[in-house]
Image (cartoon, rainbow, N blue to C red; front, side):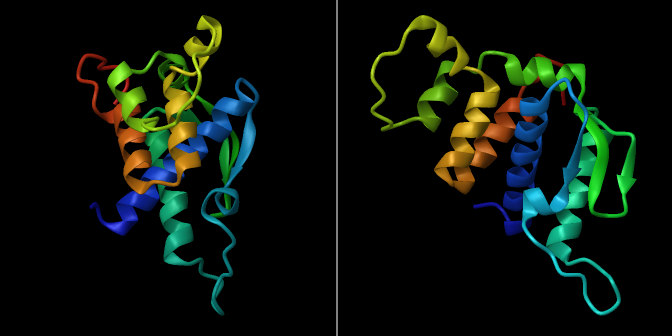
Length: 157
């Protein structure tokens, strides 16, 4: 399995993207504490490595063109964050059936109407399902499949 910090990175990315997708197109403050959990700065006012890793993941998402923000709020949040067009389009796009089957194996869901199936077949749904499952490998697979494993789409890395 991947290193713990990489698993945490994937989970932070998934949570942040879901929060932004849920609020889209509104701009929202994206708080590290809401993603990585509570943090108590040390006696010098420095945040934990875990907090800083999450903050770094948010900045990285912006550097990679998946979100925009107006400013940082210290090292605690991104002010007025919103998904970029490319990220929104990708999250709204249909995910490959093989990915959907792998993430929902054994779900036992009954046959659903086509409109509901369409909504449940998007990349954002794969991220939500993976987070709900709590499986680190599922979260990693969902994030990688959504943004990092598609050489046919050069506009989204």
